[in-house]
Length: 159
Image (cartoon, rainbow, N blue to C red; front, side, top):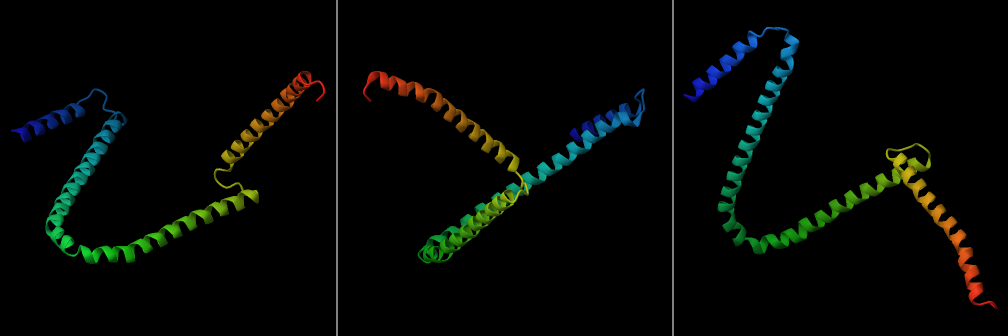
């Protein structure tokens, strides 16, 4: 019943689409694009949901089967984990941090040589903003520092 209703609705829609007064194909292009992209996104969403559910089922079945073995062999697995995976994790972290440090040094080298690496315009803007703020604070201190110095002389005339 639902399939025939959907089919008849689709057939009616297609018949109306054919018998429009302006049969210019460029007017139907956005609608066709919308229908095709919607169908593709629905297909991708369905595939994603199906893969997620299948993965969840296999994960739960794996837990049911392997948890007794994990509990039984945990006195062996913990030292293996500590002796193998912790140093491996430290080595991978060291490599990652070293790569980031080398990339930062390369960026600074290119900036100092005037090669304008990506982000240098924002760096220049921040540097100029900080310099302008410091200059304003210095001028403010000079202007009002003399005022405070004269007030101190008024308070202690011999000083």
